[in-house]
Structures are given as C-alpha cells and as structure tokens.
Image (cartoon, rainbow, N blue to C red; front, side, top):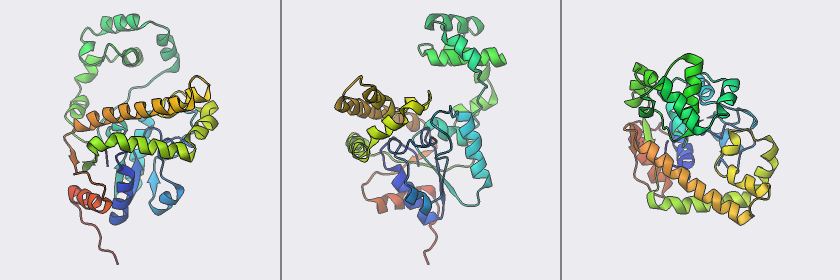
Length: 298
C-alpha cells in the first residue's frame, strides 16, 4: 500500500490485512523511532494487537537508523514469516530497499566530517576530478549527494559512473524487483491538501507539540529532520510562534506529499486504485488489484 502521506494507506492496510490474514510491515522512515508516535501517525497499540506490525519502534530517536539497516531487518522479517506481509508507507526509498536489489555502500563518520568541512564548490570540483561524468548520475546542485558520492569513492574506489554501470544498478533503473511483489497505490488527488490539513489538526489536538517538546533533547540528526518535528522544533526553541510553526509543518507535509506522489508515479509496477472515501469499496478495489481472494469468514 503505497502513496503520499495522509492518503489513508494505514486504514486501508489494516482492513485488507484483516480480510487476508496478513501482517503489516511499515515502510516509513520515521515510524522506526520510539516515542515519535503522534507526528508519524503511528498505529496505536490496540491496532498493533489486532494486526502484527513490523519495523515500528525498533530504534531510539538518538540513533542514525540507516536505510541499509532497515533493509536487512525488514527482509529478515519477511523471510522468517509464515503469513502474507503487506508493505505500507510513503517512503519510496525504504520500499525499494526492501523489494529491489539496492546495495548501500559503507559510510565513515570521520570521512564524512572531514568532507563536511569543504565548500559545495570544492566538493563538486573533487568529485568531477575523479569522475568527469558524475553529473549524469549525481545531482551536482545537491551538496549532500555530492558529499556522499565522494565519501563512497574514498571508502571503496567506486565512482558514480562505475556504480551506475553495474547489473544491479540496471535492475533498479528498470524496476526489476528482487522479491516477489504486487504493489498498489492510493492517492486522493485534489482532496489530499484538505486531508493533510485535517490530520495535522488532529495531531495538534492529540498533543504533537508536547511530543516534540518532550523528545527535543533526544532527537538525533535523522529524527530531527522528520516533517512536522523539524518545524515544531522551532516552536520549542522559541524561534517561531505555535500557529506559524503548525503552518510551516502543513506546508512541509504538502511538499513531502508531492514528492512522494512523483516518486511513486514513476514506478510502473504500482497499480493505482480509484480513490473513494468508502473504506469497504476501497478494500474491495485493493483486493481485486492484488489479484487475491479473501478467505471466507467462518
């Protein structure tokens, strides 16, 4: 179940999992962190009792929970399970890490810290020195991407052009999955903005700001970048007022949803089902799209 944030994926996945006797594996980059509950729309304890969920609350917010670690743990869950597993979430990279032959080169804190001391221009210059065609594979206007490419080269000797020429990279570009997968997408279209606004309003009522304030001293570099948390940290620090902070969180959430929509729409394996507010009809469409039969209820 894939698609932009606030599309209703979680409710749909719960209903489909109950019909199919399946379990749920969250492909959400921030639901892995303990305590980040309200702002990540994490399933409740009661929901997790009804349907087993995986890749939720597996790390403390101080940790740097890498995509490589996510891939290894999620694949272990799938390999050891005996029931169908429904992948649910809006993180396209984490979804692809689970099902596609993505390989994650090593990283080194000392090398990264040293490279972070260089200017963006110097990073680009150094990368182009070792790989003149790097701009075909790396966004040279994004210093983080350039830095990572240089870090990989220093640690492994692999250039962006060299890595792009591998068979595994070709399989990723061509969306050839390493694991058997049937993917469906949900997208409320023009209704998405209103759904984001309403959901953030509910989060505010449930105590999102208090959650961010409580977690602020513990948020590591990755967790602190979570949409919603990042904007409300400015409220906690006194940089902006509460209403302004929530307005910024709403704008950031909508921007994230647009990026997610673009990412998933590129994937030819995803079958998009017609959107409706009627959950029963949505469930029926999802099961039909998955081409499976729901077990008869006793």
